[in-house]
Amino acid sequence: MNLDKVCSDIPKRLMQIAEGIRDVGGKCYLVGGFVRDAMLERSSRDFDVEVYDIDQETLLGVLQKFGRPNLVGKAFGVVHLVTHGLELDFSFPRTESKIGEGHRGFLVETHLHLTFKEAARRRDFTVNAMGLSLPDLELSDPYGGKSDLEKGILRHVSAAFAEDSLRVLRGVQFASRFSLRLAPETAELCRSLSLADLSSERIFEEFKKWLLKPGKPSIGLQAFLEMDLGRFFPEIQPLNGSFENLGNFLDRVSGELANVPDLTSQEVLAFTALLSGAENVQKVNAFLSRITNEIHLLKRIPLLYRFVPSLLDHANEQSFDAEFLRRASVEQNGLFLAYLYLKSTPLLESEMRVVLAEKFKTAAESLNVFTNPPEPLLKGADLIQMGLRPGRLFGEFIKEEFEWQLQGKISSHEEALAFARNRLESDSVRKSVSLSSKN
Image (tube, rainbow, N blue to C red; front, side):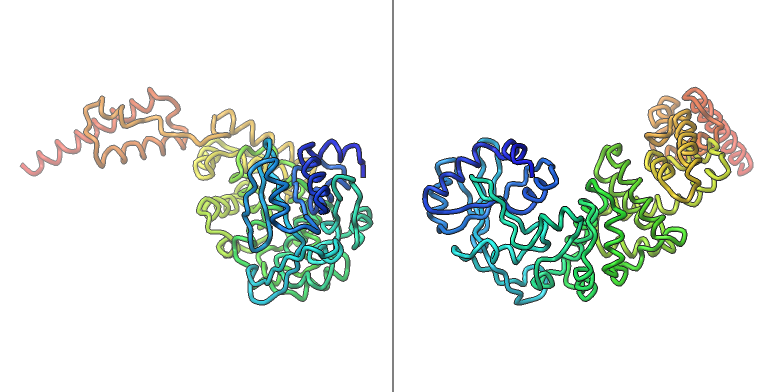
């Protein structure tokens, strides 16, 4: 650990608070993500502090000198403090005992005089069970987290791991984010656990961390397979017969996510890639409906999944004709994600994949349908100017004109207006013929 870097990452204000806690007889440790990230020489703003050997009132007395502390988790002994723009969480060492189903089925008890080792035993993995004492910056590592991190191993701390099944999925995302391989005994324990008590919301959050946070999702996939999580998510299948293909695909997509401007589109691309080996769109829908109720994802991921075979057919033929691109852009709300999928998929030969993706992008940009879908050139205001009253014919005219656009028969506003005039004239002729025949 680079102590100079660690010192620069810890705010001076937090060090002053730590000195205040020490002055009243307490001890405090930075725990969890900050210490793990410091070992990896990554910067972190994850300031979780565990306080020992003083009671809640004494801690509040110290914190009140630096801001207005908020007791946000009275049952768990958690105090939140905002001071000089910093958000800090202070907690007391505690034990957890499983007494019921689900993530709320725990009896949590705080103990002022637990040792750091006793308190750290409740944590999930050894790499998250280290503490850095403040203000003296001494490492407490009772379960060998530093050694495991150096060896690239993800190991559970104790048998208490099995009391919260979410930790199984946390193992997948930690493996991905920090390039860690499961310890054999941890993989064996995870294979014995059920995820039946987890809510869809908690499952979805762990999947998102696996697929969207920077890392190597292929390593997470390897952990997923070692834990035999296909028991619960059978829709995640090998791509073209190979999980290695799927892992490589996920890694390439992960490398492209920084270029995707919004979170929803990142989710659509990443989950479509994860489900690219699924047997059919019904399997995709079944998976999604179990982990999320977000309408935009339930709609857009199956849309992209269904589009892929046609996209790959056109890529293999090296032919991206204009009508195909226009219609695809309307269906997909632009072709940017399809481009990134094409650029990343292992289902095209590696030397041609990028070339074909760029050809696809160039063709779509030339039609101005790459970023956004085309819109009808004929507007309601145009029809009003022609003397048509708003009504059913508005929609019919605009729909017909847009179909001609997609076919390439209309490419300008003037041509759209001419189409509408001709349509109105032909309508008038039909009506006059109809009236004369009745007379």
